[in-house]
Each structure stands twice: as C-alpha cells, then as structure tokens.
Image 1 (spheres, rainbow, N blue to C red):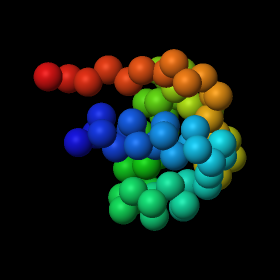
Image 2: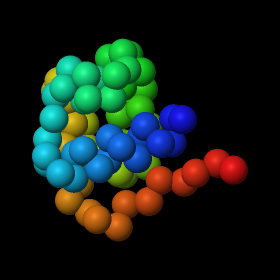
Image 3: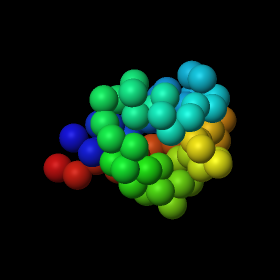
Image 4: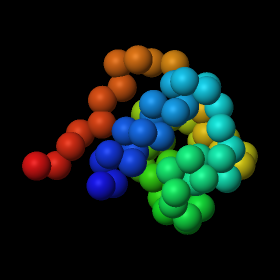
Length: 69
C-alpha cells in the first residue's frame, strides 16, 4: 500500500510539477503526517524534491520506486 501511495505521489508531482502537503494529503486521503513520511522517503530515493509546505517533481520520467514482493 505504501509503495502504491508513493508511486501516486510521484505521478501527481510529475503532472502538476509542484503541490502543497495539504493538497497531496487530500488527493491521497491520508494524514499530513503519513504524507510527510512518504515525502521524506521519496526525497531520500531522489524521486522528488521537498519544499517548504510541499514537494515538487524532479522532472525525471525515469524515476523508479522499488516494490516489495
């Protein structure tokens, strides 16, 4: 579930280029705390860039998020 949600975050940011934490949390129906954890993980992977109050796309269409099986 976390991997699916994180993949959706990357897709939303690729589409909109930048979104606020509140907008992302609303779009994904998750708490801001859950979203912030996901954003931290995605930034550590290099998939997104965190900004004050939100996040933005790295504009790299080749970002891959590993999926646990």
